Length: 262
Image (tube, rainbow, N blue to C red):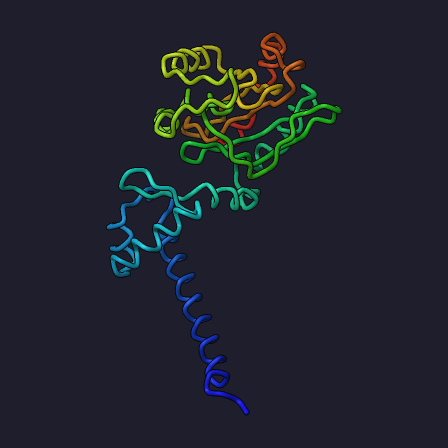
């Protein structure tokens, strides 16, 4: 004989499913508020765009921040790093990725080292294209990998050529990852001036011991920074002297990608 509780179980299950769908719908509705034209919004902006109750918006925003689907800086929210990592594969059809594909392979072949394209997301950088070195001991990275701005050649490029990137890195804090990581704002600004002067950045073991990197800026048709083209390699093959030898090739390849975006 079935009990009332057993009879009600399918209805309760259906109700839970409906509630879950409604929560997911509201989360998607809030995420849809963010766009290239509106990358940073206040809670009040989200309420106005969605017509959801203030308490609902506040609760969902908290949840999205906790899951790294949104990032919060002061009163403003923006798309989080987790979404950026998910979207890395979806960028394969973008102009930048399509333009960079053959050039990244060429850079790897000419230098013998792993070559990477990064884009910026807030106070971090995300790898969107990698061509790994064919040598035995190499820099191993992956598409979608999230790394800090304040440690590594690509991060220095973003900070050197984009004031907003520098502000984001400073707001996030200059975290030390190795003894070589620059954690002084004065030293960092000196390094960024040198980067702009020579047109490329060099980072000796700043994010991980034994690995060094260098990078050059990639710009669009308006001259705006859209990415960084980098080389990552074990330090015994990428000293400052060897980086200087690779620099003309790296800069030429970065310019070749930029030319495709004109």
